[in-house]
Length: 75
Image (cartoon, rainbow, N blue to C red; front, side):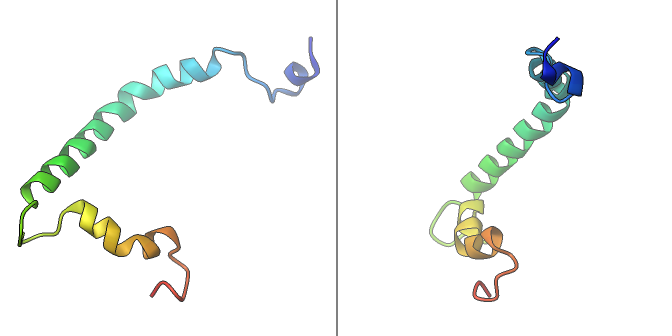
């Protein structure tokens, strides 16, 4: 027995893989749907004067607030 196995800190080599295999079916479908919806929104709002801004424009315009929400200078 090694010191790390007696403390309970280290996990077996396959533990991360098992965890991802359990979590994957729960996380992957919503993540793919979100990516698809953002793509559709981007395509529909592309053009000269769209009624709604595309998600890339929103992130670009508000990145300072997104990256540092508690900064006074970002306002």
